[in-house]
Image 1: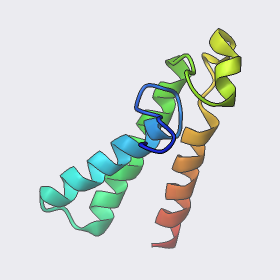
Image 2: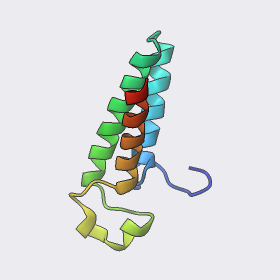
Image 3: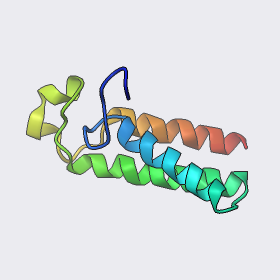
Image 4: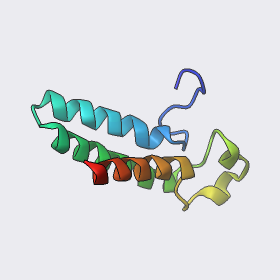
Length: 91
């Protein structure tokens, strides 16, 4: 986030990554085992990616679309979910 300047709410992959990282940390802190924590992170990433459908893009190529991007999930956020789903399938 420091390098690219993206933050939650900018409609980027950070909108899936940040909640996933938070959920992972919170689940482990609460004593959940690895798979439970990973599932919590995956669920949070899915929710974050879904939320991007209601956001106007502020950074990246999608920002050129403005309001036309609303209603479509951010590609980077969806990619994060797909990566996590692939990792989960391998666990």
